Amino acid sequence: MPDAHVLLERDGVRLTLDGAVAHITLCNPAKRNAQTPALWRALAEAGRLLPGSVRVAVLRGEGVSFSAGLDRRAFTLEGFDGEPSFLDLARGTEQQLDEAVAGFQEAFTWWRRADLVTVAAVQGHAIGAGFQLALACDMRVCADDVQFAMRETSLGLVPDLTGTKPLVQLVGYGRAIEICLTGRFVRAEEAVRCGLANVVVPAAELDGTVADLVAAVLAAPRDAVIETKALLRSALSEPEAAQRAAERAAQGRRLRDLAGAGD
Image 1 (cartoon, one colour):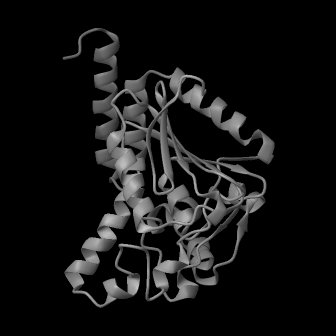
Image 2 (tube, helix red, strand yellow):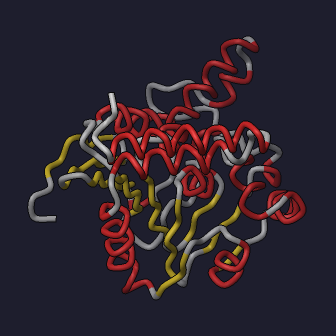
């Protein structure tokens, strides 16, 4: 990325821009990109900082693992420096706890924006919060050493970082509940077979495969990409009649635009 420039680098997150592509990197490989509230705030800020010219956002993790999940210091009495521990949050009011978790979730929601196509490049471990962050993206390109796992239930918790809905949508309820309740690893072959991974490649080919996918997305007209993503996302929840109407309206906008008759 010779023309890329750094827009943000703090708390284990680096955001660089390269034309119409944003690269968001988890950059604490010594801790396998373990996640903290500070990292979540930095991820949320990265989403807010993206200029309107960005069409694709690529998420990566430095080192051998994409993200090993939540930093276990969250469960200690000391917690993180300058932060309330999760035990402190548990002692607060229902509203305080709800607001805290809602703030954490902001790191995971902006990847679904209609004006962006988001791609996670996943290698090694993607556990718990790491799994849910990969699920936040539109597509996942995985190395052949990938290992997904949802370990929250085995810790007495639940997946609360927006991962339950996309997991069920991708693999179905039966497999999703089995993955969550057992906490087992989903490895590369199963991941691509059940839809968690769009494609699995040797680790040495991961970056090149992601670059090819990004180039293919950028080759299509932006407005058509935005409309198509919005239609596909609404198809998950809209009744058939409403979805057909949305398709007609979107196609009308595209045809008028192509004919030079748009607003």
